[in-house]
Amino acid sequence: MVRCIAETLDAHGVPEAVVVGHSLGGLVAVEYARAYPDRVRAAVNLDGFWWRREYPGAEQVTEGLLASVGAVAPAGYIEQQITNSARFGVPADRAEAAARAAARPLSDGTWQTLPERAAALEIVDELHRLGAPGVTAWLDGVDRPLLMVQAARRLPPAPGMEWFDEFSARFAREVSDELAVVSRTRPTISVERIDATHPMILETPEAVARLVAGFVRALPD
Image 1 (tube, rainbow, N blue to C red):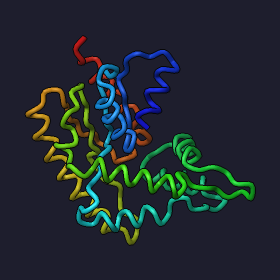
Image 2: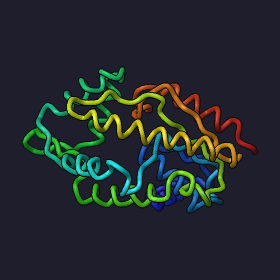
Image 3: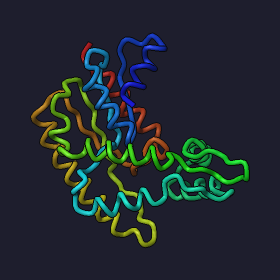
Image 4: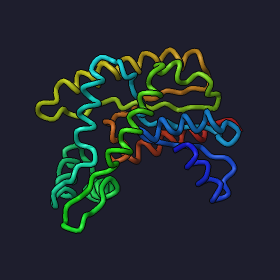
């Protein structure tokens, strides 16, 4: 994924960029800053954090994620996603665009959810690799300015998924604690919390844009 960013910027003749990513993309943004420091003015990670494979509860989370990846969803899948997103205040047009980007239509009217299983397994392995050292150690060696953004609110748990709410709350607290220490000891790392849940770029894109724009304006020339 890091190489894809480099190739895309090359194709468009962009020698230097502020790289912004959400969730998995946030992790990739930081890794790009590590791999190509001479081509990165700064990087922004929007709520992209993961845990080590041995983290308490991680195995159950991984099993749950992989149980549904690559599944064939019914014909009304897109409409279901729009309805679900409305609970979080996400407008229908944004919800529909996100749902269509995460699935491909099949000839019988159903939907293949993405990524498919083989790709998902690779992604999860990479996430565990990045999460293994913990946030503080993960950020070691990245010397470009970083904006690390955490969601201040959690998604309401789905029925039967209360355990995941407890898991994510515990992990978020630990990430917050690490980021607080790192931001005090490393002046190139800024930390912000935003009044949104994890899908912040759908829920409050204007607030996210203001936060990122303010960070970029404050960067040294």
